[in-house]
Amino acid sequence: MDHEVIYIREIRNWWLPLIFGVLLVLMSIWIFSNPVESFKGLNFLFSIGILFSAAITIGFALSNKNTYYGWGWLLTGGILEALFGLILMLQPHVTMSILAIIIGIWLIVKGISQLSWAIELRRYGYERWFWTLTGGILIVLASFFIIIHPAIIGLTIAFWIGFAFMVAGIIYIFHALRLKRTL
Image 1 (cartoon, rainbow, N blue to C red):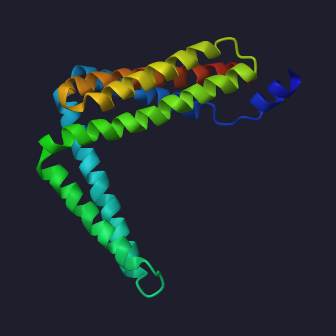
Image 2: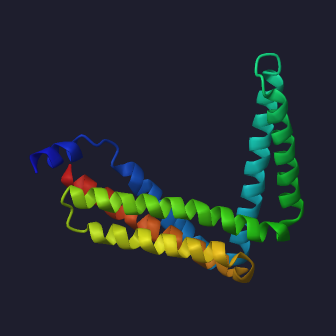
């Protein structure tokens, strides 16, 4: 048990997960309150992110064409990525299914991370590790629902994303405050 206390006391910046958790909870409240706007906003941010990534990829490929062997493939990938980003920006109805799948995959990763965190917390003797496990399971279930039913979800995607953000945010806040108390 002494080893666990030393391990926990070495952790710095306990407040970073708290800030992230509060932001997730606030985002979930906004998503619940504005489902249409949140979907449009997610579509726009997703498109901008892809275009930004394409610009970086194209710039990297062109700036390294004399030294990077696969620069042509990289350039081609960047151009295709830019076209994809433009299509998503100009054709937002196409984005619904694609965005749902990408967010669903991201949430699966977050949920699995929560499950792993729960196992780690149990190993260190935290009494409330089960809540993290439950939250991770709920996030994974919500994400599978998002991936399996992207076309049917329509505007309810905002609800499921908001639900997953709320659960994840509460877990981050809980653990940050618990960590602070331990320090």
